[in-house]
Image 1: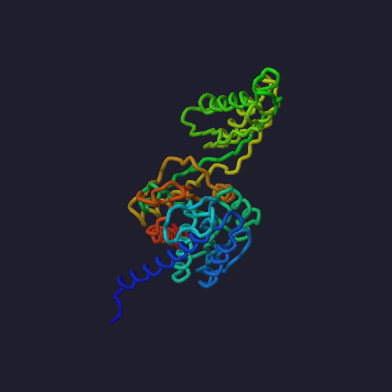
Image 2: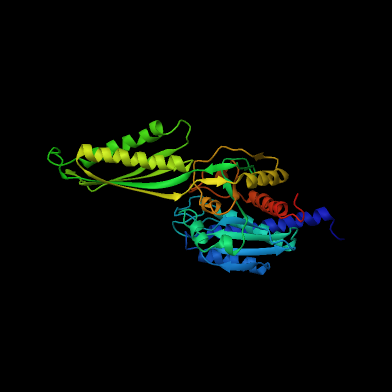
Length: 393
């Protein structure tokens, strides 16, 4: 007896889900760090080629799928890299690589995008071209720039680009985004203090660089509190305090390392300027030499308004849980570099609230939720159908 349409559809969905889950668990067991994603990239390229996509290999993997006569082109991005974290989840598919794990869900992002690629290849209900972007080294903020240096936007005619990231603690499948800024920038700073080391019993003979370092740490907190507007959402954090001192030895050098987040380029510049003024004053007052390094790894992630509105409209057809004007997130995202080159939208999708699925990103017990795979793949295929419809209004 032949299967009815609904039964056949359920079997197809189950088959696709199982295939995505197999990809996801394989990626999770064999994680690779940024710019070392050789096995991961080969696995992705092989699958895309098997499904009939045109594949280009460079810093990342590009898969191209065309249908109809239109040349209109959109891109969908997933990340390939893992993190230098020892997994403690105890799951059957836990990482087999010592000190490396997929603690940010990039394994799931790749699997969802592969599922969408397969589905669209088998049923290309769109008119135009889809560029599937599998990006390396997102965690260090270097992968998007590396692909942009390869001129992927111009080479493949990308007109819009979208990315989807799981969000632990949010209800399963809840899709949220906003027009304008959605993720903060991240700037790494180093402040090196050089003075005269000496005997701990005679601090007046030398220069106490630890005291100066402590004064700098405290003064840096005045930047957000007193130099930026209330509600700016900026953060300045000193994360390391390193000296060459020891027992009975006052150090001659102190190195402060930290992290600054901002929600606008203007505030980012104000933070750097204020930091340099504080340090210059300390250098003069304390008779030490201070060097400041301030390097922006991730710029602000700013969604295009039209692309965000289109993504929300698609999301509302896929799930009943949609937030179209969520609060900006304090973390940073390498996808921001793509958005400086082409309009697009970065979205978040709930990973669930229980167990490993609700653990924070970058936690050693975190795990991507396999129940999210079909929801994410459906969002991608629906977005392609909407943005590359045969007739656009």
